[in-house]
Image 1 (cartoon, rainbow, N blue to C red):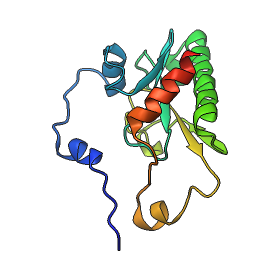
Image 2 (image 1 turned 135 degrees about the horizontal axis):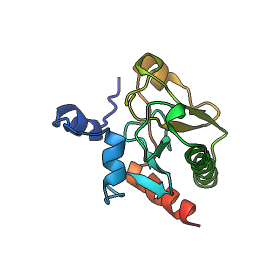
Image 3 (image 1 turned 90 degrees about the vertical axis):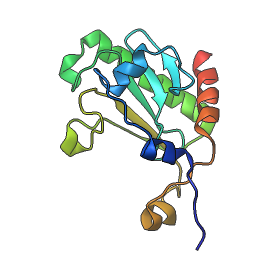
Length: 161
């Protein structure tokens, strides 16, 4: 049996977990280090970033700057901005990664799978025919064909057009 190495995960596993006064997404929103935070676009009411622990290559999230737990906490304008950036990200992923489809969704509440339940975010996961193979099914692992910083750079360039 071959071993699959994912050395970038050990930093998270062993590293200290930050004690933040706000959600991780608010912390990232207030940071100016977009490259380190894998932020690929910033708009008026929201921003987009790659998921550091993705389900699939190109998995990103669109996050409002306002820290709210559900859609009711956003104004109509903020909702519009959120979905417009989601649409732009889908277009950028289509142009750069050529997926066959997408999973787009929001997990509201811990029971629904929200990892950061206090801060609403939209997941956009590119999918390819045949991308569910033995790795996630049997090994419980995914294989990412490209480093996150490389994917982020390509998406930033596409979104800047």
